Image 1 (cartoon, rainbow, N blue to C red):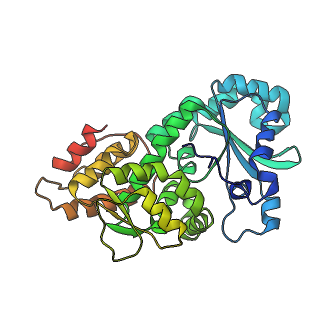
Image 2: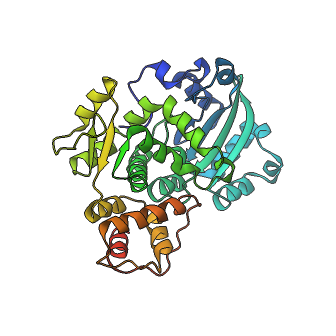
Image 3: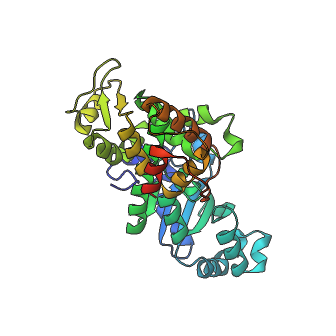
Length: 346
């Protein structure tokens, strides 16, 4: 299952006629060939409260993954030299170097008119994107891909890397949740992960995330169906129709889907035992595990620490950790079960 909501009606993919899948795919003709491309953002998947005028005037956001950034920028400068800022005057080698070595490994051209539309497009190497999806090396583009995106040009390598990214996002969000949560709370945790290091969004994060979840709930359900099914089959996650109902081993995603279609409130119940937490830890990306080790170094974790205390400490640490950009530095590790679980899965 890919992330472009294949099989959904066109009106579900976009509320704006200019941002349908077909119209956005036509934008690719204005650029040199790319390996993978997707559109994202409020112009493609409107947030709650957007008017038709807002949608029609919104800039379309695109991300291109290319195998050779230097070659791609050279070709694009021949075709679209006006897209580049003054940095472009220094040539494609400079642009490619800035892209690869500054920030999150992506180079943006913004406010670009393309086929009567206003577009912002980012260019990233396929290797950097795959690494970010699998390891959360920056949690920048991978974080955007926790939310609905519109795949314009699919790629099997990115399909597999994105599957890892979605499984990781669900596991990270569950670490931040109590033993019992409703569907919206879980999706808000998932969609909020990518805003952790964005200072601009701290004050409006809760409202913005809630608007995304409320407007895109059906898409989020489709995107995370496979990761949820995996945890349900492992007995870690159970879906129940109403608060107060006890979870059973016979819960399944099909039962959950029927409840959702019937308009019932859905609650999830997760395994908060140490074994359950260890299962979630094993599914986190490499850099997230490394940072948890670094952040928890010096914490007095021991084999006889109660499970609920371990869960609370992990929750608190993860919540603070994912409000910062990710690095890959690993320092001294804490003792006993928590360190062993993290290190064994690195």
